[in-house]
Image (cartoon, rainbow, N blue to C red; front, side):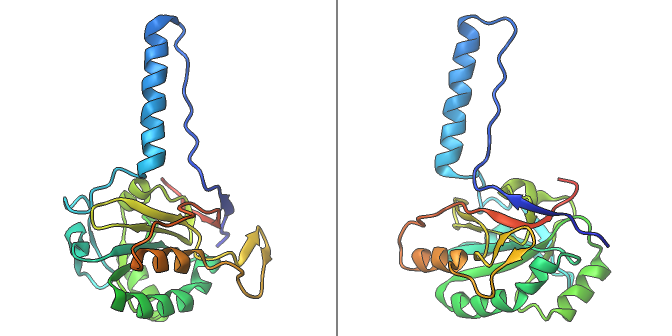
Length: 216
């Protein structure tokens, strides 16, 4: 199967149209939209992890809900695809990080977008020996809520639903078809170290290179 490879830019672009009627009302609308866009950029995604907004099964048929992350420092959602070679190569690294950071109060989930069936997900989970739950996002609920576009892309949220980090795992992939033998910057690890230490994440958004998520 051919997999499309894309670059995910670190910032969300907000496009604001101008009404054909013009006038003061248009400018008020423009300013209102600008304020909303600015608030979105500052606070991250308006996603409340405590309301049960997501309720997804994993590849073994177990239910998982947003309330699970209450009492945790944060939760990591790694978006993966069965046929994406880039995300598959990160399975060992994510296993190492989960083993280290789960003991420090960080929850880990992998997320398969809508293109995967239960049987495919179950086989994939067992073949790659995932040590944390692999969620089936059959309606791309988390894909849309967390604003991801490619695999592998990670999103880290607080128990209150604040988006703390979104982007790449590390900078091993510098461009399409260009890969370093070893990463220079381990962005996800640095973000988790900051969260565990009670500090703000300095680089909240990073450029992501991976396989495009179809059907968003």
